[in-house]
Image (cartoon, rainbow, N blue to C red; front, side):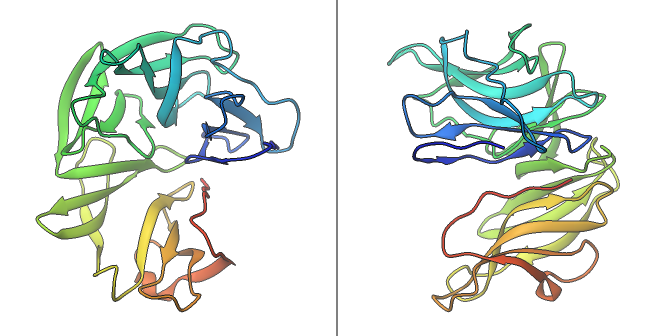
Amino acid sequence: MYDSRRGFVTDLTLDRAGRRVAFSPCCNVHDPVLVVARVRGGTPLKPLAHHPKVDAVGGIGWSPNGRRIAFEGTTGSYPDRVTYLWTVRPDGTGLRPIYNLGSVDNNLFINDALAWTTEGILFSNGHNLRMVKGGESTLVLRRARSVRISGDGSRIITERWRKNSRSVWISAPDGSDQHRLFTQGDPVRVATFYDVTPNHDASALLAYRMSGGDDGSDAIVTWLTEASPTTATVVEPIKYAPTATWN
């Protein structure tokens, strides 16, 4: 699908059909900041190749029809670097900023992924889950620091923070019909699950499981959404922080 001489990629984001994946390579100055690759191979697209003003990309999300990509993109020079939510077509046309996320110097929060629904684009500002539509931002859920959407667009998975407690929740994209799936334990003592991602109909979850100690059990795992993550099946054991997704 894609190869780079060195570095790594940030979170992978599949389109709703599961045919293309968007990601941001890091950290080679010769790499594009945003890539769209077909899962069956072919020449990757570089939507920002002709837009050098956007020189860093964070969270990424696909529109429901797969015609556009939403992403966090940073522009400007220090001390005036600003991050916006942008949208663009995979071929690089139609780039436009849709919401100002703020100055990089003001402890800007970077999303792992964005969720684009029929009602708007979901993102976390580091405190709450919010939705952007028509240039305005509205509150969806409090104390939510991440959001990932199922391939059919029917459910979202969020990680919620309350004091020192972290828990994973499932809900409708508008924040209704929510319930807690599990609470993360002390990462020093027990396994912790990162980048929890729903499959196409949110019936199962995928995550990077980091063990509570150096016992070699770090892995990409899957399990049924309504079951305990302790029932997870190992997809691939790993020895480094991986990047994986599905829908």
